[in-house]
Amino acid sequence: MNTQGAPVQVDLFTSLPGLGYLPGFALPQAAELVGLVAEVARASPFRRMRTPGGREMSAAMTNCGAAGWVSDAKGYRYSRQDPLSGQPWPGMPDLFRKIAARAAAACGFGGFAPDVALINRYEPGAKMTLHQDIDEQDFSAPIVSVSLGLPAIFLWGGVSRADKPARLPLHSGDVLVWGGAARKFFHGIAPVKHGTHELTGATRLNLTFRRAL
Ligand SMILES: O=C(O)CCC(=O)C(=O)O
Ligand SMILES: [Mn+2]
Image: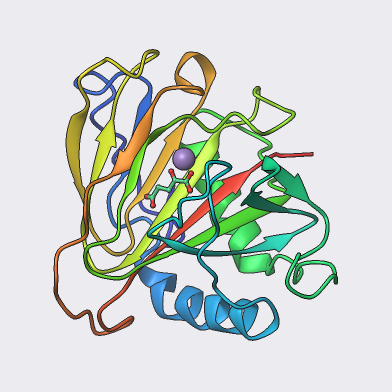
């Protein structure tokens, strides 16, 4: 069910195995979500982190929840403090938790209680190369990913980096869920095209909800 009580379309399970695709699932709350992201970013600003190899990532990131995903010369990990401030990350808004839990349940993952929302901000040209989400403690929990603002192409690979990824267009309000056998599948985002969106301007936002601790 979506937030308005209508049956949700969960498709592409057959064409993209393991990936739950909920088009427009978060559209009714999109404006509110963008406002909450701005609130999080007032306390913990977006920043471009460096990979352990020293490269600046093209997406800017922040987090909310009990911990946040961070990357620096020491590696990828979750930290209970924002390294910019030394303070805990902002708390996770209730609406974030609710949407993530509902989307997970719609894809067969009941009881999802995320403790981290990593928030990515893409300006045109920014991308995320194929990677696995494997810094979490609990792989029985799915990943729930909410897209807002400018569209993007989601790359959905497989168990190996060499698997040729499928390309799935994502629009504002779309939600993806992956877990179970697909939990560690490679995925990424192709370079975001120029454009403007009524909610976010020349920006794509993505929230990924994780059970990290
Ligand atoms: O921006 C997206 O849609 C994907 C983000 C992602 O894979 C991540 O943050 O690990
Ligand atoms: Mn990821």
